[in-house]
Length: 458
Image (cartoon, rainbow, N blue to C red; front, side, top):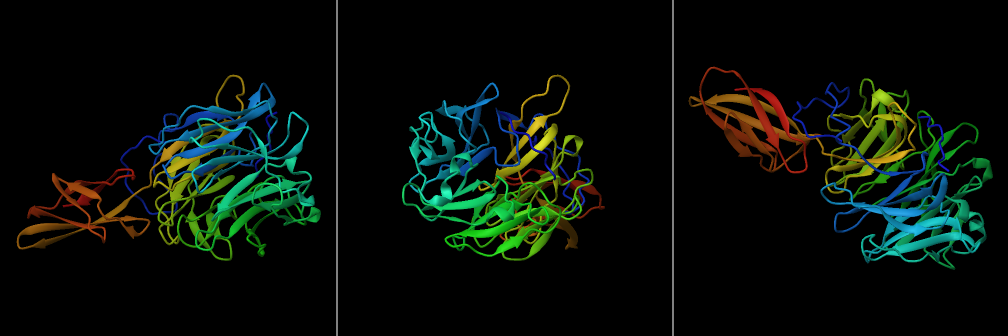
């Protein structure tokens, strides 16, 4: 049955003038043309679709399927490097599987992991594998470690992550959070929380690329509703309370290179900050008209982190990406998935653009549709500034192209028919005959970025 829980809480390329990060005044990108409905999913704050990126650039997804209102198995599909989604594959049929986790193993094999009572009445955690990129899947294999902590794991919504060669699973059950390292009989497991913590059925995992530490996020109703971050593998670390307003889940992500696992939060429902496990936070910004009812983060390229937040209906979704040091952010983009109810925002940006995934019930008239998984490809934004100087009866226009403050090399710049490319410092110089100054349009293009057009004085 579709499970609806109350959340407390792409866009066609257009030329846009870059504005400073923070309050955004940019008009929204066309949404209906940018978002593609991939599948009907279980509408909750838990990850309705698990993700794993493989070396060929494909983003693989697994999620529950339904026959009428009953669970009927697990499906998979993949999104190619250009952002095009492939067909759905029924990876498992005839099982009432819980929400699955997904691993991309070092040898390229995909493994989907889920809790279930088998048709033969065996309660356990199960795995199915694909060695051909999700085109075909194996029969289920019991992968539960077998310890006493996992007695109720068949009812878990599983999340999974790889640290080096070791799979790590979260098995939230009966108010507790159990972690299993490894797959199969004898794999150790341990309980991170206990019943007094009031942990619900939702948990997240992310890996610190510098240390290999696996960090979990989980909600608690002990004392006050709260969210926590905690290292769970290779050893249990300190629990860190997430500040700000309580939410039903905390989406977390690690950098693709460098230290840090991050989650987004808001103290007032409007202004968003990015929290790092272990301490410290940085202001992300806000967008007028968009409430941070649902927040998400995603791994970017070159150590960057994407941050996303949104609300139901007209507020839409705000999206931005950090610099390489995760200290500053690009201008904020606005996207509108036309969601009547928004459950979850997540994604993956390891190729440069963000593959954005939104779980939502669409708005509109007519019969209420089931929750859907929607995908859009979001390209990051450039910023540019220009200065004009007259040298020996010639006007020299110096252009600096940046991405959240980082210089962008190899960007193509064009003004009044003159063209150049930026150097390693993000700078290009165009020379014009000296003349009365006027306004012209600077156009900046660079692979994986949205084009930028902004007025300059020449």
